[in-house]
Length: 295
Image (cartoon, rainbow, N blue to C red):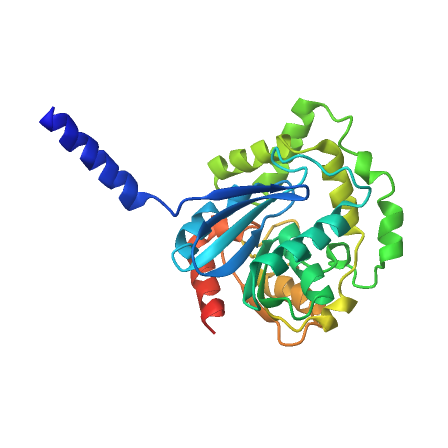
């Protein structure tokens, strides 16, 4: 019995030593929120189709000194979908209301991809809400990355019917498509599989509708409204033989042009990271984020 008690005590010690702060989960119509840690608030918003779990390793670092709020947005990764006609405007309004109720002029928002797009939407419409904004590899108008003269009207015309694009796709075909896309965004196969699982457990209509809303929205002009101190992380992995002119410098310049209306923005570019920078270069990601938060 004494040996058993010692063993149980040892196991408990290991668990307590390695355990993160206890998590609380809140469910709202527009999102589910995982809350942990203690201190000033950081709000983590994932990219399209992703779960709050995409931030797990990042949160382990920050929950020691911050209260971390990690969102899974409605319709993604098993979260119940919204019934509203316009998804992103509804979620944006609910995110703003949630941040206002959980922060007192000290809110930090970190958003990856679509999450970064939400960050830009929020900061441009609520200039004093956020203390700092971190955009992880997102542009204010992705569809103009190759042609900066493109307009919302042109793109929206191209996206007619996109909200229904996933509804009739065979499950096996969709999974293959998602795996192929994710391999261009993440280097580690296990993380690709995890992200694909989130994709496959997402609501098909929400997938298409959110894609159409985000791709058809041009935020470049409203960036001038943002007063929040902002950093944009720019992913760069390696040159692609099929696109010899798309160098690291060319990639940086695309982002610089997209963000030209955001006064004082800091652009930080990686090496050896695809779209999911926090997965591909976690040490660089944490170091760069630490530096921005401390300044």
